[in-house]
Structure formats: structure tokens, C-alpha cells
Image: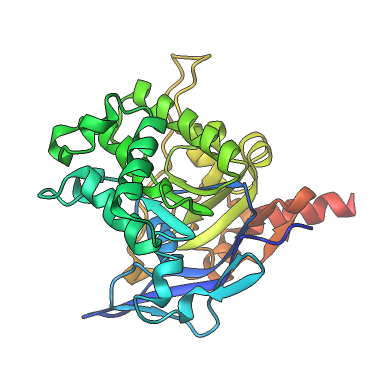
Length: 339
């Protein structure tokens, strides 16, 4: 069995606030294999970006990780416990080295007073011993690879001179120029029109095939995940509620929240069908529900609603490692076994 490139184990993260410790990520575990695309799905406020930033130690200084939390990065036979890396020099392996990140809004990520090319050259020189001339050559080559026209000219321009789609491509080029083993893509297509979205998705697929790179793809759109990911992890209020292959999760969703996300998508084969949003709003992390965190919005619990309100569900493991944290799914599995 292939060793995971990165293994997240029992990750629990809280933030120190004036109101006390606020839980943002609760006991989350998942692996990403070399060359695999894992889709992390959920509404805004589910904890997706906070989880991803934990892999690069990019969360704010008021973040507190539980002692049992681990993020293990395996590179060339060496293992790095990411959460124990201290100091800028030690963290170079996870910040632009073996791990790179595409942020949701590239305009806020590029320095506005420095050219795109200079920023690309600077990061290459930080992570290698190459000359400035070589770094420029590689940067222009990468801008070409992501489909930016006239890359040599664009190299000397600023972020505000790029369109939204070109800025996103430039950020992908910058993230890939160090040839990372893992690319974290935080909703990279959210601000783009449909045509550019498709181009970016196709580009990322090609890059996975060429570089055998792994991707953690964060989005709220299961439709995008169906086109890009190998496996899916569904997140709600800091908890992973369902994980499995794309085919398992899309075709046979086992958690009510996953089914709610799928039902909220437009149906192209039935344009008259009404959209069915997940009822209610995601609770504040300051007031996490007891028992199953989804019980305040679940419309399927029925006879076991009281159990959902009081007991935390255990993980049920189905065919080929399809996992779900749900009392209803567990009761169905038990009924099937007894039958």
C-alpha cells in the first residue's frame, strides 16, 4: 500500500478569543496519497480553509492545536511533523517548498507594488540556490505553461494589470514553479466565470498527470468536485461527516448533510425542479450543538432525533472505506446486517 504524502490525524484546532476558546476544527483525520486529488467540501464556516492552512502552519497566532493533533508530511523517505516545525527556516519545507497554496482571491495575495515576475523570482531564490536569471527563465516558462499570453511581457506587469482569470493563472504558475508535492487550492474557481473555471480545472488535471502532484481542492460546489477529485471529504462545523470516493459520495450519499448539498444543485435534466437548500443556517462555533453537530438542521432523523441531540455519532465504515458519522446511517447498516 502506498504511503500517504500527507496524513492528518485527530486534528483539533481552537482559537483564543475574548469569549474563550472557540473550536474551528474538531478531531479531523484524512490522508492524501501521492498523485491524488482530495476534494474538501462544505458551506462557508465549515472549517475547510482553517484545516488547509493547518497543513502549512498559516493560521493566526491565536490558534491552539490539541496535543494529540498530528500532520505528518512524508517526502523522500523523511517524515516531518508539521505542527512541530518552529522558525521560518524549518517551515520552508511546507511554505512554498513541498507544499504550495492557491488562495481564494489572488488580488489580495499578490503584493500590488511589486511585479508578478519579481514575486515569482523571489520565491524561487528563497527555495533554491538558482541564479536570478535562471529563476526568471523558469518563471516565464511557468507562465507559458498555464496559458498566459505574451508571458515575457506579462512577467514585468503588476497584478492590477491582469484580468481575474489571468491573476488566478499567475497564482497557479507561482505555486507550481517550486514543483510542490502537494498543492492546496482554496476555492480557486469561485471568482471566475464558467468558461475560465473550466479552463482552470482542465489545467489542474493536466498538472496532476504531468507532475504526479497531489491536490487538496477546497470548494462548496460538489459539481466542481465531481469533475476534479478522486475522493471527497464533506465537512460541517469543523467535523468531517462523510468521506469516500467521488462515485460513492455522489451516487450513494450516506449523510443527510451530503444529500442536502447535492439536492441544492440545479438539475440540468429537470429545469423546472425547485432548488432545495439545506434548511436553517450553520451554527456559530461559539455555540456548537451537543450530540451530532448537524442535528439542528437535519430533517431526516425522525425516531432517533433525541439520540442525535445527545450522542456524538461514531464513524461507520462501509464498502471501500466509505465513512460516515451519522446515527441514521449506522441504524440502517445495523438493520441491513440483521436482515
